[in-house]
Length: 352
Image 1 (cartoon, rainbow, N blue to C red):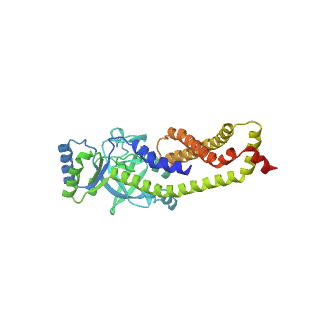
Image 2 (image 1 turned 180 degrees about the horizontal axis):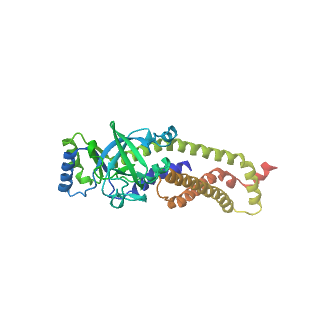
Image 3 (image 1 turned 45 degrees about the vertical axis):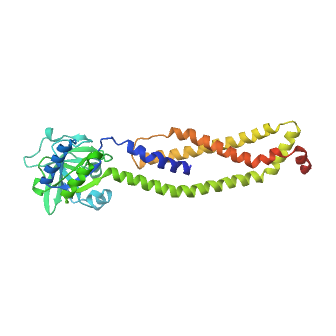
């Protein structure tokens, strides 16, 4: 079971996770841009005919008050957004991969006051805080204060490689805080040299290559699993020795049974076949137990850790029992061969 688990993780698990990411999903994050950098970046996309993605203004803020009350210690412990600065943005277009679950986006939002600034909040965080539409949030931005009214709640797909935010303010709400700019974008492999040259010409940029990170993770998993796999192969060898010892412990009774059956007319071929069937069934059962345990663990890993779509590994449900049947049957026949080839007369004399 452990060998199957490691084998599936090494050969297909990470590849399946990558396969759920669209081929044109963003593979680079580019941040810490100023206005001049944004203009140069857009020019690069135009020259290379790369599809443009939204560039968001980004500001770091702290949640100072909720409805004029500072967050409690319990609330701080329930979500790390209260223990650190978070990145926020302002946008007129609805963020890619988000979904409004309550309230309205800016084109249909009705302000309660002309001086109110609207903010859209991640629905999960809003549920933890206990926010309602129309509640007031106060943010600290580098010593300055920003008051906002909750306009909507969004369901955010945090698994996507798009740039996501807990808080999205209405357009131009962050201009007085001198934001930097960032975006997530798909850069084809052929255009990576141009991006590298662009980052050298703009040393202030923060460039993250998601594709390289995923490749490195896959390599690390492969290397670690190889080391663990060696230990498990040794464990499997020890299991074979245990099976051999168990068979040899019952070899005398097996000889007596085989001798009596041979004396009563059973052929050597029939006896060898019965041993083969016995151990083949044992191997078949071992294979089913192994793949059932491995599949249960991997499906749990997909659901709980990777939060991805469940993907059963049907090929291994066939391969594991077949390999177990062949392996254990061969081992059993080798161990019990002496029982079959011993002449019946000799067995009966020894029994007497």
